[in-house]
Image (cartoon, rainbow, N blue to C red; front, side):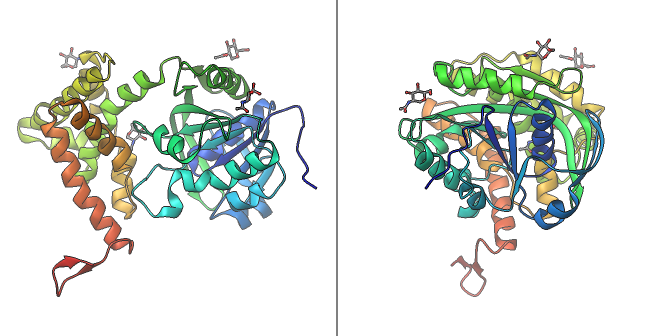
Length: 359
Ligand SMILES: *[C@@H]1O[C@H](CO)[C@@H](O)[C@H](O)[C@H]1NC(C)=O
Ligand SMILES: *[C@@H]1O[C@H](CO)[C@@H](O)[C@H](O)[C@H]1NC(C)=O
Ligand SMILES: *[C@@H]1O[C@H](CO)[C@@H](O)[C@H](O)[C@H]1NC(C)=O
Ligand SMILES: *[C@@H]1O[C@H](CO)[C@@H](O)[C@H](O)[C@H]1NC(C)=O
């Protein structure tokens, strides 16, 4: 017999227990309007026994903190008999990575178990991740009607890191915007509003409903596509990228601003108007803050970067809409080589030197 968890509060499963995922789960738990499961891959044994130790600028100090349920794997959660109303994905989005780390593959077990437990009850998948067109992979993998799927977008600004086994340090306030990828999907819009309410710890975090997710994602891309990519290529934080430039100007004038102008043109080709002011604002704002974007840190750690969702997908749009993007294309093609080198180091790509070919 199948047991369906029909408790009144919605069930959340947060997949990805890094600095972002743990604070996301904590925020939902503190609000106490939902039942929260967290998938904790590498730290599972430690967290099960000792809980998390959290220093949070939003909520204070915790020792021994655990969400309502912990799972080692998404498969284990899918066998629990729980219907997960909200599947919240806080992993990195690397579609060119190993098959097992691709988002549709990661969430498949709970999508299937939800469908099996109750084919009519809606499943809301919320991607709290960077990038453009990340919803397409999900829509290709899961039929919207068959799974009664609503897709939500989360854009999060937060400074939170996992600094050790079960140890989380949050130094920057959590600011989350949630909306429906498709603003004509009334179920997704309602689910996004409900999500915002279940996440709203007024006076601690900041959460808002985002009526225009595509616009917000393109605006964030201005920064990500121009600045994060450059820092990853050269292995420098943002202020050094600006200061070490020829006459202290060439990075801003020859790389950042031209790349951002191409993003603005690309967004325009998709009927999204980004103000050019933002480009200057992002450059000015980042000049004084010692900051190394995650793409640069991933590269330094030998981990794959979120290259396809940050540059690969926008360049597909450029090709489709006939927009010229010389600067972004060079950044992409150079980073593609870097990504391939990271793949080789991680055993995902084999090069035979005796043949001088990929094998
Ligand atoms: C999806 O869920 C909604 C809300 O419960 C319901 O109204 C609708 O009929 C469901 N759709 C399908 C295709 O099952
Ligand atoms: C969050 O809660 C506060 C206090 O109840 C409320 O004033 C605010 O409007 C809520 N925010 C959202 C986005 O619903
Ligand atoms: C950026 O800084 C420059 C030089 O200080 C200034 O002229 C410009 O107005 C600033 N732009 C924005 C949008 O902040
Ligand atoms: C790029 O840097 C921004 C700005 O801090 C950060 O929020 C984002 O996660 C980074 N994205 C990638 C793909 O590195």
